[in-house]
Length: 88
Image (cartoon, rainbow, N blue to C red; front, side, top):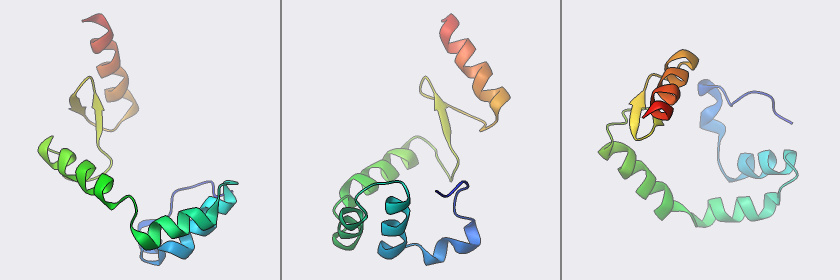
């Protein structure tokens, strides 16, 4: 299986065939994944999530939220935010 995310410079190759391959590597039903990509079966969910992110001030990835608050995507910042949320 793939050990790292797809590097930005390789993301152009992403598409139904690549999604199928990745799914197969994870012992998932690659054919169903490819079909969903071709048919854009989940596009409404993706668009709704994108809009929600924009409404929450997300300008790109990674974006991390703890208890509804956006925090810097570092282990230290996330850990501090979790501890602060727990103490409330």
